[in-house]
Amino acid sequence: MSATSDFTVKFWGVRGSIPCPENSHRRYGGNTSCVEVRCGDHHFIFDAGTGIRSLGQNICSASDKQQIDILFSHTHHDHIMGMPFFGPNFYPKNKVRLWAGHLLEQQSNLHEILCRYMAEPLFPVPPKIFSANVTFHDFHSGETLEPYPGLKIRTTPLNHPNGATGYRLEYKGKSFCYITDTEHTPGVPDRQIIELVQDADCMVYDSSYTDEEFPKFKDWGHSTWQEGVRLCDLADVKQLIAFHHDPCHNDDFLDIEAEKADKARPGTLFAKEGLVLDL
Image 1: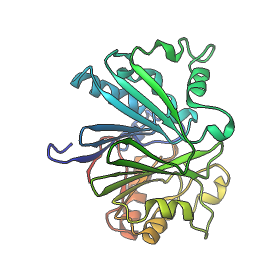
Image 2: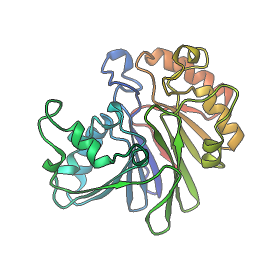
Image 3: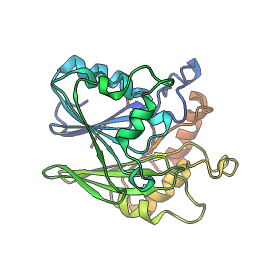
């Protein structure tokens, strides 16, 4: 990351559904969703897929005293499977706040879900094994969060089975949007997403499929990079980052689609593990 930038984004996991360690997926990466955002002294992580393990190692090598906020789009397996292996959870000096906006309407909460996930016979130890100060913060999608003075996070509900939350993080006049997992309706742009991402500097968007593939996956809860382009055009977003790549899409396939996307909307990128953006 740039030593001078005050707002940086780094991708640690860009894959959807399941980790893909094959050689054919190496250039873009096989870890599931995890994006790190640093705003001045504030440290945010979006989703805790398998990519969060390497991120945690990086954080622990820097310091054993950190305050970190992890914001979950939702709690399907691929977005939480790295949580038990996030190193900072095991350092007593650390403070880790966990946020989710899709569970209260289901009469549930984030602590309950992670306890069910990290329980026999699925996992040998519960979340109470964490020695850091880990706290749980549930909210309703659509609320605006202010985790620190002068830093706002706007949210919106997304169209995904069991619910999901989209985020817009605003800091010092810049904005970063994280929109995954969501399914669009062809020909009917999602007005809630457009309102959330209007004039944003960057939108990370669920691009699991192409428009050609999409009809085969109706009701699966995902979208296309072409819909991401359409939303960015409607909302005047500066840059689109295609994200949550389908496991069946290998590096060669993604290279071809990335070239198409850049021609359709210059500056569009397909997320790769290790990609860094300075906003």
